Length: 144
Image (cartoon, rainbow, N blue to C red; front, side, top):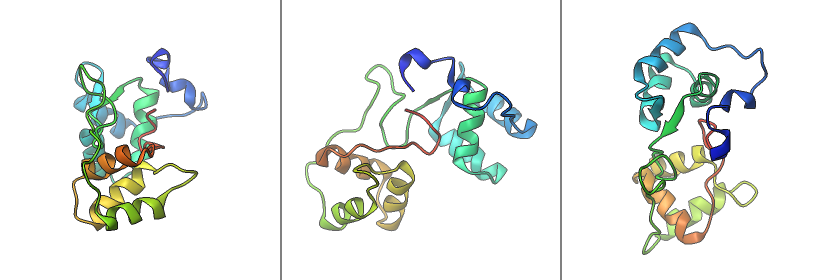
């Protein structure tokens, strides 16, 4: 999605797409100024025992923005993205990233898995991807 799509996120989904009322209420409670942070979306998914993608669809249908990506890729003001290239990348991390690539990109879910497996902060994985010039896509919540 691009800046011009803001406020029309629901258009990514079939018109008959409905949001579970409990999930909707949870999201609306978490929303501040029509935004929900990525960590808040993750927490909602955990509490409601649903996939992050389901929360992402609900956010789209409700036209709520996702901010503060946990990989530092979007949703920060004023600079938009906060991830910085890594100065060095340990071989285990580089290998894990290369092994998880899909069509030359690293899926967000794979980045989270790598961070967990290697006991690293998620931003360390995205920093390595910045250095390696690897795009992290698609987002588990459906952003981008």
